[in-house]
Length: 326
Image (cartoon, rainbow, N blue to C red; front, side):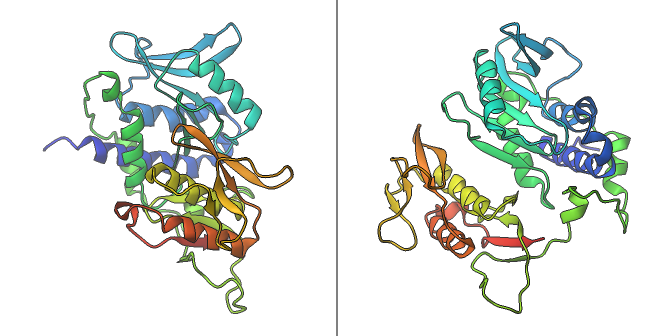
């Protein structure tokens, strides 16, 4: 029987990890060590990093006698490839001050990349950018794990560091997790956004008419972008932010300043910072920081997100953008 491909093995592992997150959410949301063992270590091993080999994966590396970094991933000659910082399942990964400090400590080791993860969300940072916004966000809370697996292979495959890839067969635990049918009434927690909680989500076109009284949709919970990736949402503003990140990553010839949907005075994207008090986000573009204006109501958010997504390259338009609501 032929060995499974690296991609197939990784998808199987991600499925297993999602199953573990669902079944053990109460424990993992309170215990970082358990999150590492159940969710993060399996992914690193599937990517070719032997977490039991301290020469390849150095645990708890102390930097500047202050900060301990959870995983330092090294090539065969000891050159540092990546640094991975672990958090408890569900813990926020974007606390500005905390992220800034971690980035400083991690990049003092001169890695190619730095990741912060709670096991289901992986935020990737690049030393080429001085901002605190991740250059890539990989989320496993999705029914289609193939795009996430491809991103992880592209960013964190041990082969990039010079290690030869050995594909291990799926363990019985992983096989059983994949084959086990989902419980019809899984345990839920008030803030739980586990895989089971979103597998039955129904998507509506992003251009949906929010004024239609027949559609009592609630708050947006998930965004599916044209490249097929799915993103969990906390606020309406996240729709515009996720759309902008994708466009900025895939189109290096945007007309800046880019006027918003109103097309009059306000710049949706601009090199200059908006006036004090206005809502905006800083994002990386062409090696510099660009400002995304976000001071819109829900209809304005959707209109401007759609305008941005029209600027995607044709190769990234695999599906229509859509929303799923809570």
